[in-house]
Image 1 (cartoon, rainbow over the protein chains, first blue to last red):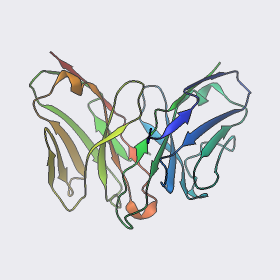
Image 2 (cartoon, each protein chain N blue to C red):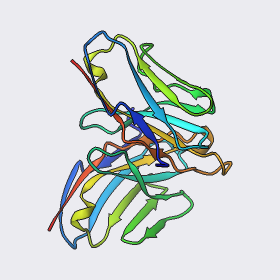
Image 3 (spheres, each protein chain N blue to C red):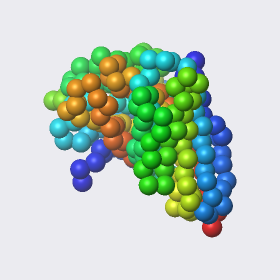
Length: 117
Length: 113
């Protein structure tokens, strides 16, 4: 499979617990994005990686949210002390940066559905 | 601040009909406007996209119309099919700012047989 993969596909946790969500981008894709899709709402940008650096983390809703990317590949989104309002589908997307100055299509993974009880 | 507004929220069309979804944006720095299609349990997938120097782009049954002065763009699905039933999102991005996508709220399209 050459697509973006995410794990776990579903995660149920209790309020106050920490969770880690994983994204495996398409091989060779240097750009990686995290979005959040809340029930009945559109997709909300969280953070953008170029390689291992995060030049835009302006969408992270609070300091409970953090993300890292290692080896220019796998990324982990961590939510500490989860709250019920964190319940959503967390989507990861990746794109190449082959075409400088052009729009490089973002390919999305299937998402991780997070439920905070 | 909602930078991309999408309507309608839901749309029901008969097979063979035309589905029309509209979006309006505020930030004139946006320079790329993609449409994404999402089926239940799946991530969004790029359907068609347009740049602001073009007023219309057609790919098969899907057409984007773009009005730069009005800051509006729309998706037309001709000869709509039951298999087109999905949620559609318009989006906008700025290529020089990492191309993060700003999405509309989504339109749930149902095409009845």
